Image 1 (tube, helix red, strand yellow):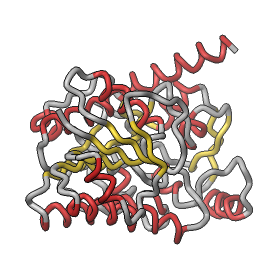
Image 2: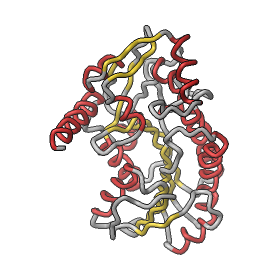
Image 3: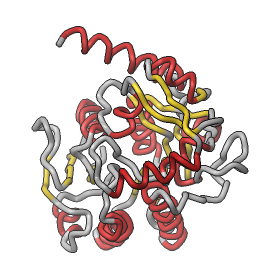
Image 4: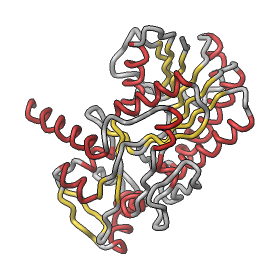
Length: 319
């Protein structure tokens, strides 16, 4: 039985995780924190409106006798205030780590991302956990993920008394996902970089939540890629989602996206740096998680996307 503290608990992944943790027979107490209230209240979790930079977090951890922290909170949706984004992601994570030490937490499960590897033309066909983290500086989310991931690894080395598990999922997808990635993938018309057709991969939200549960139960230290099997090309993705891609040359698309982003045109939800990830593959291998964690995804990347597309079409017919 573990008493668990979840940061970023009101997001779709935090919500799913709370549902699964609360359903376990040996479930301890669950405390969820976020700066926005959850969509659906549940008696399975005590919700606290708290910023991850809150200096009083250690008192909350101690009051609820927390032994496990699951750190999900991160600025996912790109924002224009890069200083604030960096402060939340970096200093917020630093605060979570230090307050966990102060409160005597025994296990931290930190969620990183395969975006931390960066999107580069010289990436190997399959990125492994020991590959360097080269998150593109031009895309703040991926860059911050890389730097925070490194921070957590350094923390783990400095605090052997705490078990630290870092999960690096690829794009988490599924029927309840609603973010800028899902909106871009399922819009009827989009633009792409002429001559680019990189491989991309997905992990189903159900598989990701299961990986988190395994990490909590097994308490195995280390870094693990959490990915669906196989990968799809960008054109295969568009075929499944029904999106038509209009190819534009890179020299035109990059400045166009940046101008529209700076003008805050609503349809543009990312800056030009995201285009690097749409141009170069960053496919990661999941063998280590399979061997050491015992995590095997139920859905392949193709099945993740097909399942999501099928459920979205069904939902559209009901409205």
